[in-house]
Every structure is written in C-alpha cells, then in structure tokens.
Image (cartoon, rainbow, N blue to C red; front, top):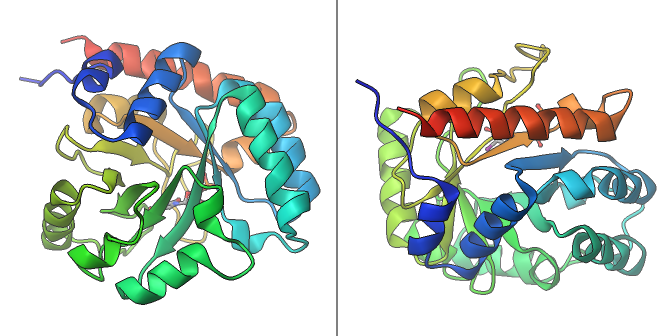
Amino acid sequence: EEKTRSSYEQKLKTAQHSVSKKLLETAINKQSNLIASADVTTTNELLEFAEKVGPHIIALKTHIDIISDFDYKKTITPLKELAAKHQFLLMEDRKFADIGNTQELQFTSGVFKITDWADFVTSQVIGGFESLDCFKNVGVVAIIGMSSKGTLTTNSYREEALKISLSHPNVIGGVSQNEIPEDLLLFTPGVNLADSGDGKGQQYNTPEHVFKNLHSDFIIVGRGIYKSENPEQAAVTYKNEGWKAYVNSLKK
Ligand code: 5IU
C-alpha cells in the first residue's frame, strides 16, 4: 500500500522558514519544481543560461567557484537582476564541510561573499549541529545522501544526518536519493531523461521515479539542460515532466 504525499500548498501551510515559503510559493506560481544546475565555467555562459532558463525554473544552482572570470560586479550583480526579473532563487551548492568558524569565513569572506547573494546553500552536516549555526540569513539544504556510485552516505549516516537536519532551525531541506521526513523539503539531483550515468560515477533516475518513489519536492538537473542543443527547450521539457510526475505522485 503506497502512502500519499503532501502537496506544495499543504507544505506551505506548515513551512516555518522564509526560504521554504518562497520556494513553495514560486513552485505553485510557476507550476515548476525544476532547479537548473548551472555547471558552466564563465560569467557569460552563466548569465546567458540564467536568461534562457530563468522563466521555467524555481531556482538556479551555482558552483560559483568554477567560474574562471568571477568578478562580483560582473557576475553577481547581473545574476541577481536576472533572478529578480524571472523570479527564481539562487542556490549556491558550496557543500560546506568544516568546523563552524571556518564555514562562517567561507560563507562571508573571500571573493565570493556567498552570504550577500545566495538565497540558500548546501552544506554537509559532518561538522555537527553547531557547524550550521553560521548560516543565519539563508536556508540550508543538508546533504543527506549522494547520487554517486559508492557514496559513503550509508543508512546509518543518513539517519544521523537527518537528526541534525530535523532539529536545526536553519535547515530547510535535504539532498537525498531516499525519502526523508516531510518536515524537510527534498531536493533530488541525479535526474536525466536520456542517460543512466556519466561514466564518472553519477547515477541518474527519471523525474517519475523521484516524485513517485521518493516523494521529492524539487528536481535538480544539470547536463540534461545546459549540455542540450537547446537549453531553453530542455528546461521546458524537464519542467513539464517534473510537474506531471509531481501531480501523479499526489494520487493514491
Ligand atoms: N549533485 C549531484 N549529486 C549529489 C549531490 C550533488 O549530482 O548527490 I549532494 C550535484 C552535482 C551537479 C548536479 O552540480 O548536482 C548534477 O549535475 P548533472 O545533472 O549534470 O549530473
């Protein structure tokens, strides 16, 4: 007997964190649960990509440290303008993994100054509960489980990671390839309609699988979109497939 899942509207009623609310509202307004991963390496590519896919996504996921010509004014200022214009959030996939004091420095300092522009960030929870205290003004998406072959995020690791995530007020959700408690939003990468892997350890599932079997809230798609001949069209396809799979997952 399969359990049903809560809708975005139901989750919005109980959401505590302002970033959770914004994500859920954006999903409802845009009828999208798609987060595009912009794993590109120049400012131009990043901005062009954001302009094209912006209308179809709820958030753009960045790895800001792979941008070879990063410049705060030339990279972040226009990116923030595009986020406002197309109504998407900025998710910096930094995967912090240190003690609290160091994470705080990595979050606020250096050239990237993530605290000034990211709506939410990813973080490992390997540093323990207090290591997450520094992310006061953003939402944290905790890494619970990874999509890659041979990952060390075993059952028992995931259980402990969930305990921290459920109890920390900064945590809005988790990244996982398994179902997690409904109090946390579930973000699932490793989604691709054409491929089952990338030859470098990545393992892919379909939107149908992640919504129906994991009760995911949001899919994260990288190469399926940015490597496509027509990224805008690919974003529309993943948006529509994701929404259809979400709607189907609400049925008994
Ligand atoms: N990502 C994963 N799997 C994980 C975690 C993060 O793929 O378990 I945690 C990131 C890596 C990449 C994006 O930025 O999500 C997926 O990109 P592709 O769709 O191109 O594989």
